[in-house]
Length: 142
Image 1 (cartoon, rainbow, N blue to C red):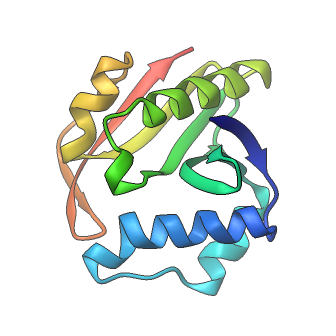
Image 2 (cartoon, rainbow, N blue to C red):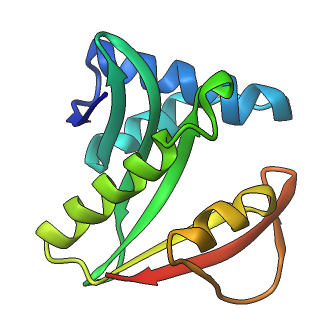
């Protein structure tokens, strides 16, 4: 499996949008707007690949100084639980560290809190609703 930063607008980016749409948006009856996708030009886009096929992805968004936010973590349904998400998270954390960030935050779906806790993230605050489902703010110091 290869982990790499991908370019906005590339063929790999199109795979990333499709994967996120299939895993994260379509099941909730949602879809990306052109404005949402346009804003991603500034983000650190990360993909996990087996040859040319994207297995999983996530992105990092620069927040206040020293902090990035993880968003849009997705792994193909049939490959969840096989270490791809863990590898993506470790890669994202290394990139964040290498670029001088000290903290990663996220809005984690309630169903994924246990996964992130195993990787050292902690819940900060109360449950809230986002994109129609329960979430928690989570963070980890790098």
